[in-house]
Image 1: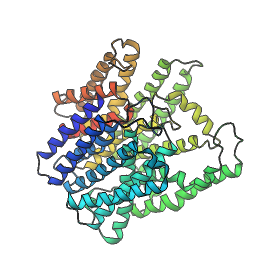
Image 2 (image 1 turned 60 degrees about the horizontal axis):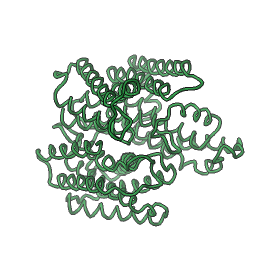
Image 3 (image 1 turned 45 degrees about the vertical axis):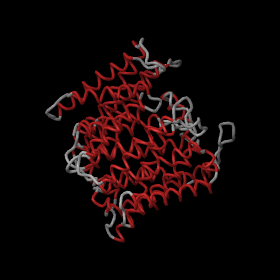
Image 4 (image 1 turned 90 degrees about the vertical axis):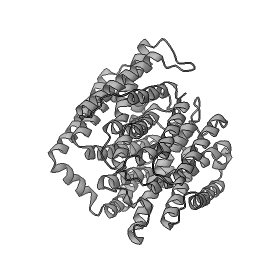
Length: 521
């Protein structure tokens, strides 16, 4: 049922887009994406060893998530996303989706570097041809951006599927790889454009200091395993092997610092036009609001950790662990909504710093890097969700992406902020999903067909989310507290939460942001 909700929403968003003054290319590409999603969903590929078991592939999410987000960003008179830029990104998403489906049906492609490279080059050629024929793209910079995005997507898709098998569904991994490849292609082409001139269509999208710093932190952390691959390869792969030498461990941390000093920091300085570390320190030290927010974030996070340690029991049931997980969700609501109220820009930067820290800590845990890997592994195992079946523990990373993503995206769209869309991830995960889980476990007797979730939990999701939305709109003085469209969107999200085999922390915020931004601007 979750795929049905996504496909219906994608079709409605596409229809809404076609009512305005848009080029025919955007309509053509959007319709092609929808047809691919429907056909692939109705003809599910066989199970794959690369993706999470006991879950559908999530093809509808993998194909529709990025286009839905693009439609939402393109909506509005003051949007930074022009029709041409949106068409460019839709086209790259179309080719990415075709590559995802190809490797699902022919997984042997991923085993061979040569075949993967051939597929990547084929994707680049296909992107250039479709861009020229469908969208009428003639600018060399635009075609280079599209080809580079598809190339990065293919390499990231292969590396993640082979290295972290069963940690993701295909749809989740497709969405993440599309976002990573878009950030990577943007970083490369925006750097190039400083030398050859702003002849690339996305030059009008705002590249604030916060955006550049966030981009460099997240991309930099994702590149760390490649940058220090040699010392990481010397680490033991299992707990039964002997501990690594201190020289190997020292090389890992020295390599990490050297990579920051030689790559991340210089590129950030170059892109921002000023020294990033000094900019951050000055931006906090001379701003009382930000100092207060920093103290609040640190105080709430520290208090939550100590309360959790105090509540932990030697032998815990699933219900006990679930309560502790949802306790952190509630803390996140207090931190993030308070941060958005006081200083949205500082909150966006804080999200990026926290996300890069989470990625780095997961690198240490996954590779068993002393001295903190074992302690991290032991602590995070207490919070694993049913979707954490692979070598990576991703639920906490997804939670932060789910809370941060709408806040980042709403700023990226330009124009007046849509507070409901911006805070949709925080509300859905911190309030709606938490209530659905707690009420469902305690009072959920009427189950959804084929699922362990209950109608009682879904009702709690709807009531809690609507109440939180009404409260947020009242605080921000939004004229309409609730509408039938709001209720319809939240009910759709509750159906997805109850029936999806994908990770709630990822799919709910994307769906709600796109729906609120598109249908309730």
